[in-house]
Structures are given as structure tokens and as C-alpha cells.
Amino acid sequence: MSTHLTSGQRALLESELELRQRRLSRQLDVHQEGRTRSEHARDVLAQDYDDAPQRAMDREVDMALSDLDAQEMTALGRALARVHDDDYGLCVDCGAGIPFDRLKIEPHALRCVGCEAQREKTR
Figure (cartoon, helix red, strand yellow):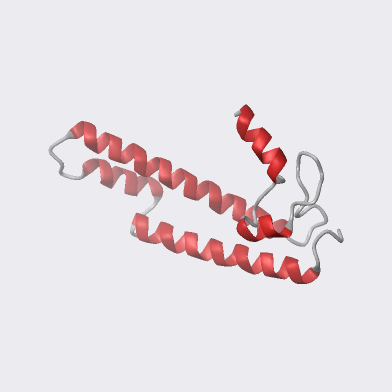
């Protein structure tokens, strides 16, 4: 196992990942009111508003937010699956250790700050 992160740090990050996953899951449940993503989107579109273009825009915003939440849930799940692996906490681009303070803020981070900044510039 990598010595970059101690077993205590990994346990703390695992706890944080699980907590975030539970919170996001509850948030999604409340937002979608127990319905599937497509059922929720259909209901938003079918709401009785006077302005059809506004309904369509509301649906698009709602779907985009749901997509972001789903992406985060996937990232959290992947991070939980590898939290005790040798490569957890190592930047996928440069291989350097991602600082523990960054991982406390974003425990599913895949890149160090420098590589993430470079990635965002080129996107």
C-alpha cells in the first residue's frame, strides 16, 4: 500500500465519501420525490404552466442538475471502491500524491491541483 496516505487518513476519507454519498442520495430522493429521473423529467414538462418555452427550459435545467448529481454519485462510488488501493490519492495524470487537505475537501479527486487546473484550461 502506498505510504502517501496513512490508514487513519484513508479511514477518514472513506467515512467522508460514505457520508457524501448518503447526503447526495437523500438530496436526489427529495428532488425527484421518489421517482426515476425520466419520470421526474416528464412530470416537470407536464406541469400546468402558461409558458411552454419556460417549461422546456425548466426541464432542461432540471435534467442538467440531475446529470451532475448522477456523475458525482458515480465518482463517489468509484472513489469508495478504490480508497484502500495503492493508487488512491495519486494524481491520474502525473502520479504525484494528491495532498490530504485537497482530498478532505474533494475525496473523489483524481488529479492534483496543478493537473486539474491544466485539464480545465484545455477543456
